[in-house]
Image 1 (cartoon, helix red, strand yellow):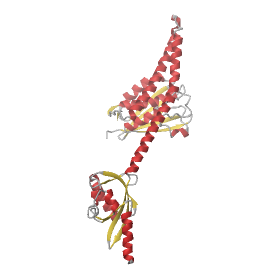
Image 2 (image 1 turned 45 degrees about the vertical axis):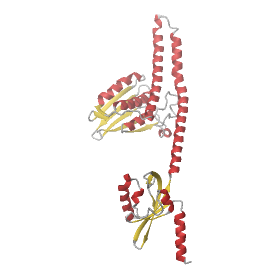
Image 3 (image 1 turned 90 degrees about the vertical axis):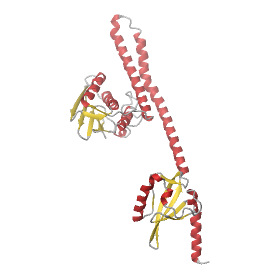
Image 4 (image 1 turned 180 degrees about the vertical axis):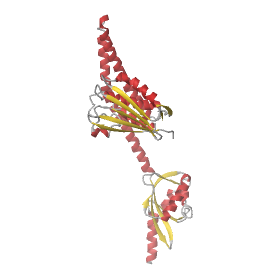
Length: 367
């Protein structure tokens, strides 16, 4: 047996016994060779792939793009993987699609350029990845439920205990001259009920976000009237000697969802009030120009420890220096999600014991 024949037989055995699809195409994209596995993979009868254009193995919606990529590859051929970090789709003869991984090589024979494609069906792997993602999502949901139960049992206990004790004490103040004492406990009850309502609203908001049920209604409105209204509502929460200052530069019209933006600013102001000392100033600076609308909220409060800052917008996260102050750890997470929904960005600067600055950036014009 001649050495040439032996080489041909070895090549044929290797080519057709391979457990991946191997296809060779010329510079025009015509299939000139395809092994047995490739025929099975694409549901072609033996040797029926020869002479077909490569695009017949690719979904129609990708044809134009693939021809462009093929032309570029022929100009600068190199061994490489296709579609890194992407899921590529191939098409069988009957039109059904399946996910693949493809590696490319090239060679020249008698001045003719050829490309060789090694094709792996990754249907099973993708199914396993989907199952893994589903299990991870289920685990995340269970973890969230556990953390919710732990947080709720802690955060609900204090206001409920306050309400119960105040109601018990109210029953003892039966005389007219006890009205001031009654008022004190009524105020405590109102404050505790508000705390419970705020907690429940945060969970309702988070639930709607996770379910994609937040309706975004972008509109033009006056920033001065908008902020003035929020400040008026927030004044009742100020500690002794605290004040809120509002400054604005530029045009007065802002474009956003006023309800979602109000929630964001109310949350940031509530934190500023809660974590700032008596007799401190909380500043709101607004600036609008042709490109951006900027809103800053600056406080003189506790600040955020540097190691905690990277986790600030995570669900249920609370900075290590505020664990003794009531809160769910959901507020800033919801703020971050709302900012995404209104096409904005939020950043912050903070130094321990020197306060924090949160900056909201929104597009001024409708896209």
